[in-house]
Length: 139
Image (cartoon, rainbow, N blue to C red; front, side, top):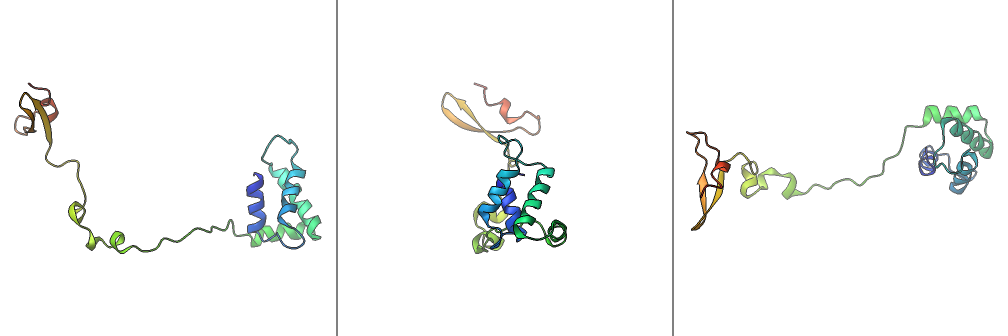
């Protein structure tokens, strides 16, 4: 767990109040890191941090651990809700090719053949099973 997620955990668990402020949480996190180069703490260090939080809030560690285990319902997600857009959500208002189900890549296979006269359309020959892409480079 890094410092940002530890601070979010404390905020989502409603541990931050007048007795324990956000800067206190950051200082506790910095104090318990054994290796100062690392940005993350282990589970044992997390338990040490909870002990420091219980001392700062002046409540027994067992009471804090019970509160976190029973009353913490996970992270709080605060995202925006999508508005309904009539022209996007209502399929009866679709126009063009999308009104008929959208574009398809398996329509009639048509390729372009370069000839001396310019570009001309060549349809694939289904009866002889010669794919259209094999006719592209015929001159």
